[in-house]
Length: 85
Ligand SMILES: [Zn+2]
Image 1 (cartoon, rainbow, N blue to C red):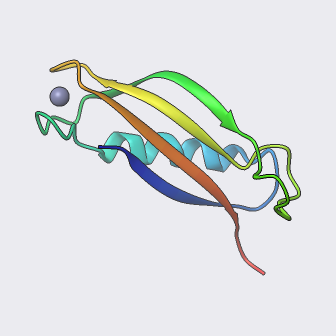
Image 2 (cartoon, rainbow, N blue to C red):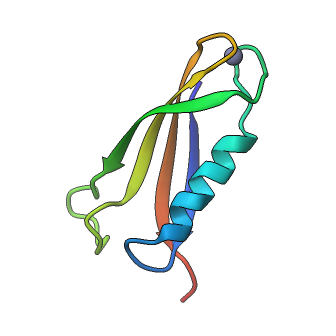
């Protein structure tokens, strides 16, 4: 089971977006053991879909996380959206 969230950003790079990602990560429980001990192992930048009108070089982040309690691996995807306007 993987998680996906939308993060509103006001520009790029947006340091608030990174803080939000970690905030959300801190609230996620492991789907296998239900402990809130998911830790990020790897982070990938998502490139915009070809043909999309996304105007920044990165359209989101994908975090590979692992539960420190049971070792379960989870992918958490954050898709950026434009906030305001
Ligand atoms: Zn676990």
